[in-house]
Image (cartoon, rainbow, N blue to C red; front, side):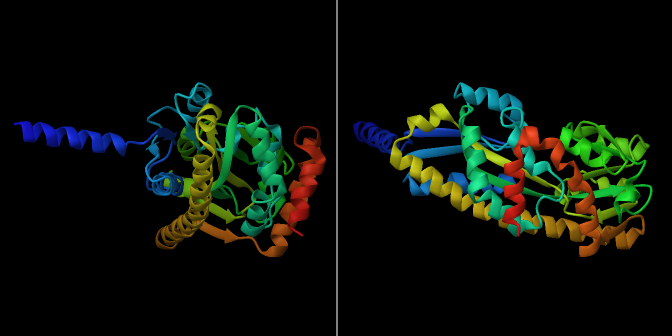
Length: 329
């Protein structure tokens, strides 16, 4: 009995000695098998390895700790330490983040990542940090495509008179108004039924959203436009960050850098595989026609939609918009 108690005591001491000194709750609203979910898990794994168990990251997927807006409020009080909301959740705090919503401002993924990893990206992270969070990184969702039920969208005039579901965003509403379309703000959860019932004619979304929510099943035409970007910003509670010693802050930054590189690869791979599945559906059923804009067609769209940029010089900043454009030249 004494031997058993001694072994139990030794076991407890060993367990306590290996217990993490710092625990970070990382909340996100998607499933673990998405690029964001996988990246959060990878980040947790690398933090544990690099800190030798000093810091533990507990990942909570599927909004089990609440939706992003509620989580961001809780982070102010440090009851949750990390989250990865979409940019739209921060535009009220930092309107300059609206630059990422401007249509056709990015030529391609290389241009996008050059901006995110450069001076503009760091400047925007710093702006969010000044608002009470520690902004650590950008994670990809992907570029948006357009779809509708009336006619192929090959030139801006094809959108005239069509009703498009949009997020409640001034940029996105201006984007459709400039081509004489009718923007209709609707919650994401209502998009499928709105398309199915003809409440709206079309929508814009990333391939992952179009595929997982089966929007392609209730649309006749889809155009690969890559006209807009959807991304996430990984943030941490400032109180939690300040509690970490300098060497552990370096660990978090290194793990985040590695996770970000992985997330971009996974997001791109998922986009390609899901587009292939949509193309397979289109070929098999004949119910959907998919178009890819030629470089010349894309330029016509870009020239037209960029006419809205001056509307946002006062909120986003003319210099910031021009800096993003210059990075692509």
